[in-house]
Image (cartoon, one colour):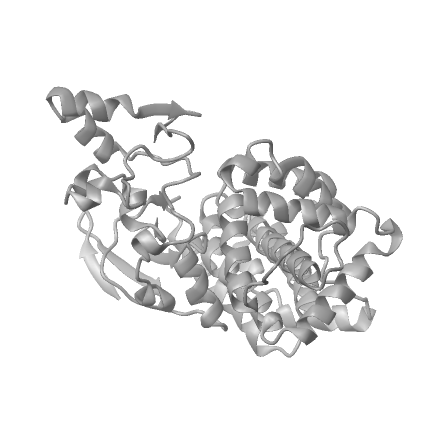
Length: 396
C-alpha cells in the first residue's frame, strides 16, 4: 500500500481496485459527458479559491456558485456545467487551472473514501470508460497499492475494532459469492439470512457473538428447507413501484432521454404480466437471456460483488450492515431488468417499441445500460433515500 502522514501524524494507507490503473479518460470522444446532468458539489477548498479570485473573473466565477439542499454546487446552464468548453472538456483543466476544479471533477470517476487511516479508491461505473473496464474484466475485484488520492468524503466513528471486523466480514462474504457453486438467487437468500442475524447482534452491542455466527450453518439451513429462490429477491411489484414512482422522475427525459426511453420500454414489457407469476416469469426470462448471451451470469455476480466491495464499509458509519447488502442486490436486479428490456426489444418482443434500423453490439449495449443505470439511479443520492424508504416499507 502507498502511505502518507495525516495531519495528526498517523499513517494513512491508500489502495485501489485493480481496474483503476486501466482508466484513461476518453475526453472529447466520451459518449456521455460527465459535465452534463449532475449536481456538481463544490468542496470547501475550491469554494475558497473562487471567493479569493479578484476582479471581474472572480465575480464571474462566484456567479455560478449556488446552494442546493444545503450544499454548495455549480449552477447548471441548460443542464450542463457552465465551465465546459466547445470541445466538451473542462475549461479549467484546459487552462491548467486545476485548483479551480471541484475535487469531485479532479478525481472522477475515481472515488476515494477514507475510513480512519485507510483510503479505498474505486471506480464509478457511471463513466463509460469505467463501465467498459468493468465489463471487460469480469470476476472478483481486488485492491492493490495506489498513490495517495484526496478522499471525497470520510467515514469515521473511532471504532477501529469494528472497522477491522467489517474488512474481515467483507472478505468472508466475497469468498462465499465466488467460491461456492451456488446460483446467485440462492447466494442472496443465504447471505440475507446470515447478515440479518449478524446485524441483530451488532445492534445489541454483541460484536464478539456476531463474529461466531456461521455462514455455513445458514447455508445448510437454506438447503434443508428446500426453498425455491428467484432472481427477483425484491418482488417485481416492489421494483415496479421504485421505477415508476421514483426512478422515472419528471426531469429524467431532459437529463437522459435514452434511459427515459428504456423505462418506457420496460413499462410496455411488464405492465400486462400477471402479478401471481411475475417473479417466476422474470426469473425464467433472465435465465433464458443468460443462456443466449455469453458472460451475462458472471457479469451479474461481478456486479453484485462490486457493489459489496464498494458499499459494505459504508456501514462503519451507522453499523447497518444489512443496508449495503440490500442495495447491492437491488442494483443488480435493476441491471438485470434493464438488460432484459433491451434484450427483448432487440428481439422485437416489446409491443410498440420504436423501430431500430441497426442494433449496437451486445457488448456496447451492456456498457451503455450499465453506465446509464449507474448515473441515473445509483449515484443519485436523493433517489437513493427514496428507494431506501420503499425497501423499509415493503421488505424490512
